[in-house]
Amino acid sequence: MTYDGRRMTDDVGLCRTCRWVQVVTNRRGSTFFRCRLADTDARFVRYPPLPVLRCAGYEKAPREPGAEPEPYLGGTAPG
Image (cartoon, rainbow, N blue to C red; front, side):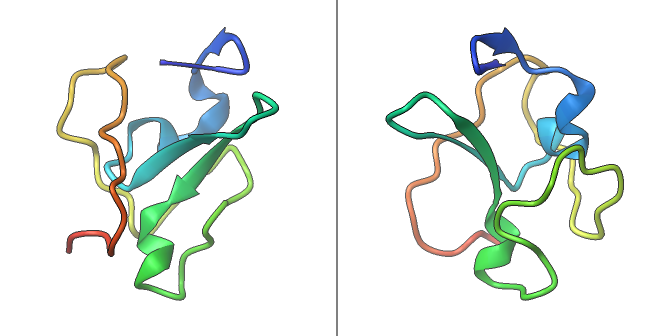
């Protein structure tokens, strides 16, 4: 997975491997890491400042490291 033309590394923190992350890239090429838990739980910030080092909602994503995140198709985060 890449962002801003670089390989995503630990500078993103826990979001890098979280099941709730949605990687959003705008038309200008900027990349943001959106927390889908913020859709249903006010304790979470939609776009948290990075790196996220601690998070009550963190769940390791059920995918291989380096794989692209699953696309977010709208609605609420499963829970």
